[in-house]
Length: 549
Image (cartoon, rainbow, N blue to C red; front, side, top):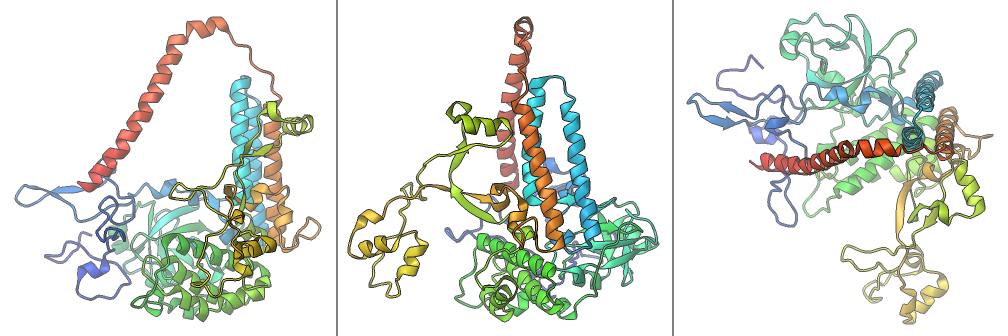
């Protein structure tokens, strides 16, 4: 800012309480639980730009005595970084599935049409070696898209950093990237419901906002504090939203903000207590994924806003449970998450119930690799030529962190676990007979288990319709599921056809004269690639060293 009071170097735009201590508004450095000391290699668990990475700023400045000093501010992103984010070009299911079917269909069709055009371009390549590589890469991209189900972004959609707009009125937004008077919708992820989508009118005639944000800013917008509150209590510390301009063809549906959600402060309501076990970062992320899927399922089923709000409140606790040491177990009870699962999924322990939440849900399969052609049966080879993938199990055994193979059950002292029963044994893959033998001292049942891999459910299903709540193409469940399932199957089929084309291409004839003539050039390119790889490793280490400097 250019208008700081005399003697003030930094102003904090935060929703945290003003305690009079600037450190209370700052992010605390992470303590390594093993050493009890700050992890100086990455104290904030965030990627901080080094001096060589910065284009518009500097990590150092010259003080009044002419001495070089390191800035107190760590920069994570600069002004052109957000324009490169995937959220500028795509729409995730957690948002689009809650919108009208016509918009879903339109944005999915754009992805499909784009892939068809890309395939057509690849097929026009005359060099079969290059064409084969391009076809296989295309097939892999289609397979991934068929799982993640991201739709095409809307025209002029951008990711923007939100800032407190000086003198910006409620219901308005200072957004130089858009036209005066234009309506834009703001969406923040993770996205809970339509009641979290403010529809704002662009007003760029604000002298103070122009001075603070810039009249030509393409990556920042200024909003009223009530808008931030509607966006799941967004902060002005680098939080971003996706801006979506509306017109006669693009109509984003929203609902009024929910007051109980605006007033909800998870860090206060669910502050941890002395001796409480803090959820791990990994488990916090897992819980966030689960509740996001539940919200998507509930919205599609038509759950009342009150139920969705409870789930959203729990998600607000889950996302910060590890970072701010929140009492997630109490939040789960207060927002009756198990009851919501039972109500909308049939069981408190039930998992994802619609295609949109099931598609990326993990499933565990035995470790496998694609078969070599020489290992295939005639029937398998025929399938392979048609573009299908043919696998074989690796039969690898699972190793634990200590390098030892993991047994199917952990040996336990029966006296220390009085509640040990067959339910626990079932979890550990023992049959009832094996469990009884184990209780009698037979250790032969404690054999090693084959190693498993985690894969998305959709990746292993022939048709996405099998993952819908209805379970079939005839009965896909809800309309958004049917639209996404059709789209997913189209992408899978494109992937198969691309592989089929690649596997049936005639080999290019090697020009032995050209191979000999350009031998030195080929070796030179190989050496340059090797040097680039080595330099890349050195640059990564230099970045770490610079961060510690």
